[in-house]
Image 1 (cartoon, rainbow, N blue to C red):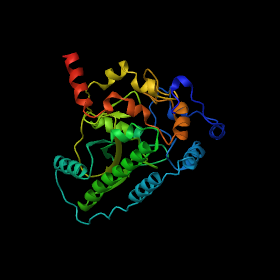
Image 2: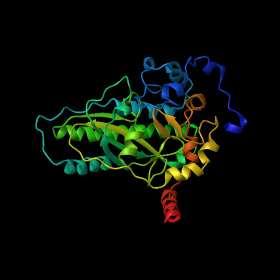
Image 3: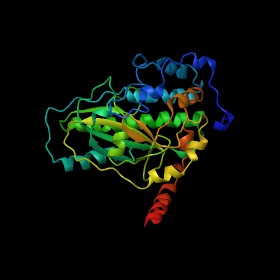
Image 4: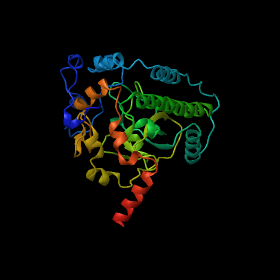
Length: 321
């Protein structure tokens, strides 16, 4: 039985013995008023972060489930797929034409959302550099029935599978860009991604930030996994999309109440110079590590339920009309 917040989740001694002498919230910049680049903290090369031993703990304590193993192996295979070389012949089109075509490649490859914006320095993790300034962010939809089993194995399989699909989409776009004679670098959405994914996704109109710290999309709610690539292909930039999520989350406590380690802040926090929703890393990670990942907050979010986002948007619009 899942321990809820009111029962007081207590991490194992084995895990906490690996905890570094630093707060993950401090690494993330909680309370900092100046904008800066983020530092690596999790799902990076273990040597880049003091939480590397905790990443190994997660791997060592994953369930010995055949479906989980096969899904992870397939996602690893997809992630390692080589992008074909750049064509020696560069095709010229307008930025508007390229944007339309790139988005169509994304949709045809499995994305349910795609946006384009200009890279900002504060989105690039400080141990990495990115070669191009145009960033294309894509979203693939998770299956709610699988997600709502969180933190059980079917939910973990769904998350890993969707990260694989995000890599398929970003690889497909990068391959197509190379065929046109332009440069691109595909990052997918997991393992050593050198940029934050949520900020460019928000800036390019994929959704708004929810209280649970993940993006909420107009059509797909919180059941979205992100991927990205960067390119020097000339592209038009999209605008942010606002449809009432921020005000909704201020009054909603669904994810906050559902979180077993009580990691979701009830109010926005200042993080590296930005006032935003934030999840307490030091509370979230221990539960995540001992429960095959998590996702309870996303499953509890009203926006996640099939057919609900459209109804919520209409109610919000009516409220403010």
